[in-house]
Each structure stands twice: as structure tokens, then as C-alpha cells.
Amino acid sequence: MADSKPTKPYRTYRGGRAGRDDPEAARFNFGGGGAGTAAPPRPRTPEGMPRPGYRAPDALPGRPVATPGGRPPRSFLRRRWKRILAIGIPVCFLLFVGWLYLGYRSFSDEIAKANKRLNRATLAALAPAGNIMTSPQISMIMGSDSRGASALSGARSDSILLVRTDPSHHLISMLSIPRDLDVEIPGHGTDKINAAFAFGGPPLLIRTVDRYTGLPVNHMVLVDFTGFKDLIDSLGGVTIDNPYAIVSSQPFDGIIWHFGKGPIHLDGRRALAYARIRHTTNPRDSDITRTERQQRVTQALMHQLVTPSSLFHLPSIGRDLAKPLATDLSAPELLAMGWIKFRASRTLECHLGGVPASIGGQDVLQPSERNAAVVGMFLGKQAPQPAPKGELYAPGCTVH
Image 1 (spheres, rainbow, N blue to C red):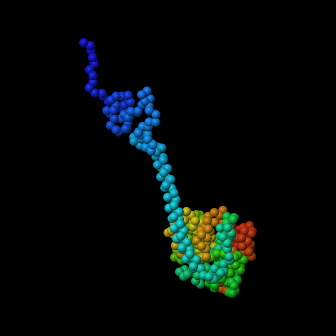
Image 2: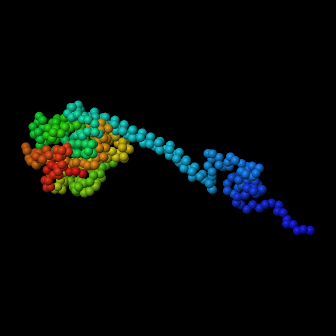
Image 3: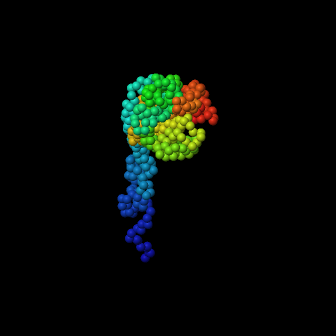
């Protein structure tokens, strides 16, 4: 009797992927299709070759082939993210543009109110102007020390600043006129130039400046200091480079102010004090250097107006920006001025000057003969020259 090996009643499955030629593989295919299960047999021709045109079920169009662990392939994830970005980026851009439009409308509506605050007599005194983005123009920025009353009341002007924009040369020029400069005021004789505002308001001040300097004023911006602090605060403050330390020798707004040398960030209250304090412990400080401080604050304000942060927050800060202003400039023109300042490669800072004197019991500045040359520098007709060292009240220009 021949020896024969006993036949096992079943086949032991030890894991792994069953081969296609395993006749028992079908018993272990439970429809999972994952690792460790048998793939369905591929249809073949009678010669044993794969049938042409056949595709496995998990390779059909539109169905991602699963990677080990059940994750979709990277190509599928990339296509999905591309679709998300293709839809999300345009939507975000439209929302951003819509927000900027709402901000511009809010700012424009408030500036329209500021335009109505300027009376017809002031508008008639202004020289005709072209497009501010293409032609040089001169704007007068005047701060009022009314301290609670309207900026158009009979208060004297606290600061007089002429700003000339020259887009073709990417240049901003500033000319400060000391408030105590003794000049001829039409119809009122000789007096401090800031008295012209008290005698006849902005129209008389415009004519006085034109008569003395020969500069036509194209635009007027009146700033009421009662709202100046809110304007600066709404922009998040301003940063300036202070050339030397300043300590006030008398209280201003109830405080003895200290401003260190170098870059300093000022909120509204500090910016107002920095621009207006007249009496300091620094012997180099004078009414001329005070006008230079006002120029620095004005420059920082113009620059801050067109920063991305300010433009993004226009819907919430539009009212604060326009509240202390009375101007003929429209919203686009104000933004254009800020844009010209933002793009300017140079800033020319000039100031008129004179010799201190006492006339009729009041301290004044007798105009310097060099003031005419400084006006020429301001217009770009002469090379800028700084004021002589050691002369506190001498006129001059510097380029920054």
C-alpha cells in the first residue's frame, strides 16, 4: 500500500496580496479593495492576453486612485486647491475693492461737507488751477488758534504754510511764513501777517500773501486745532524725525512737554503740542524753528494719509479726517496730494525770516531782504540755500 500524504481540509491564508492565479483568492475578497485583498480578475482573450480597452474599476475617469492608507493622490489634491484658489482669490479681491469703495464714499461725503464750510469770498480769492496730478499748484494750509470757535471766525492764524506740488519733478516744496512777519495788509496798513486773517478772514490773508510774495494761491485748507487731535488719532498717530531735544519752558495744555531727539511717534495731543509750543528751554528754538516743526507734522500727516492702513480704514476714519477742515479741495485732490508726497523723491523745506524788532509795543519780524530769493528757491528758480548758521530768524531752504 503506497504511502500518501493526508489532504488538508482547508487552505491557510497568511496575509499579503493573493496572486491572480490563486484559485482560492475569491474566497478572501470581501469587497474592500484595499491592501491585503484580491483584485478582481481582468478579462482576457482566449489566447490569454488582456482584453483591449479594459480599465480597472478604480481607474475610471473622475475617480481618484487611492494611495496606501486611503488618502487621495497628490495630483487630485493639487487640482482641488487650484479650484479653491481660482474661486477664492477673485472673491477676496472683489470684497477688498468693495471695502475701499465704501471707504472712499465715506471720506468723499465728509470732504463735501468741508467744501461747504468755505465761503464764496474765499473761493473767489483763489487763483484758477488745472489738474493737480499734472500741473504745479500752491495750496495754503492755515491753522487757526480759535480754541473752540469756528475756524472761520475772527481768530488770528496760528500757522501759515504754503505747499507746492510738482508732479512732473516728483517734488514737494513747503514755505512757512512766520506769523509775526511785519507786512503790508491791503486796506489796513502794516501789521503782523497773521492779523490779516482777523481783519478779513481767508480772502484778505490770501491777498496779503500774494502781494508780499507774488505767489498765487490755488487752494485753501483751513485747520481748526480743536479737531486736529482727532484727525491725528484717527490715522494712528504720526512719526517724525526730531533733529534735537525740545522741552517746553511754559505749560502748554497744562503740561510741560518733553520731545527727545530722533524718531518719535506722536498721538494727536502730542503732535498738537509739538507743532504749537513757542517757549522752550533750547536756545536754538525760535518762531522759525517752530514753523519747521509744523512742516514736519504736515509732511508726516500727508504721508500717513495714503498708507495702506489708512486707506483700508477709510470707512471708519473718514469723518475724523474731514471734521477739522474747511477746504476747496475735493476728496480725489486731497488723496492726490498725499500720493504726490508719497511718491516724491525730495522735499524742499523753506521759511521766510527777518530781524526781530519792537514796533508800537509789540514784537515783530522786520522782513529780510533774502526773502525774495527764498521765494525763488520755493518755485525752483534758484538753487536752495540754507539759512546762515547762528542766525535764528534768517530765511533759507533745505532739501530732505
